[in-house]
Length: 216
Image 1 (cartoon, rainbow, N blue to C red):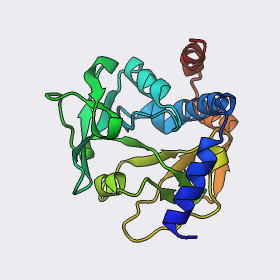
Image 2: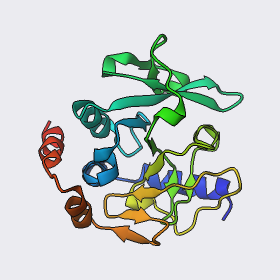
Image 3: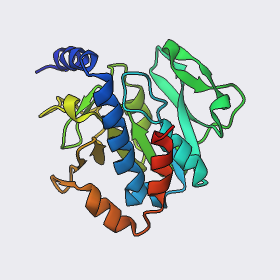
């Protein structure tokens, strides 16, 4: 299946996801991500600001702030050239409606070079368990991630996961794909369970933070 055809198919499936499913899936994805040892250990995170139909990143960003991590989010600097930059934010007040109605950092905030960022949280239309990712087609993330050594983690609803995403030489593979059901590890060609992630973490105090967010 070609990229365009798969993208249209998944977008239709996304429209039919229920609010109840999204709520449960968002909680599951956030829990798996926040308990994952790499997230707990890094000191800097680049994370997309989620839109209504995407896996929610509010809990991830707020938890990163509470843990004292540097948080950066994308800002479009050229639609024509599909270029964006990473900008540090310290609160939701640092955001305003920007390109294509997406929340972006306000002018004047620090732009951070990619080599200073340890972990990138990347959105998708769909992904597969082998690290293949299909974006919206503009190429912003693939262009920005090219040559970066940071961890590259993608968030995807399990219901929108594909068996195989068509990729080309310009597409950046993900190091992990997080869904509400599993954490897919492309290199191991397997998945990590939430119990394994908790065991590796050693410190599960973060569970209290997660529960607090979803009680709001």
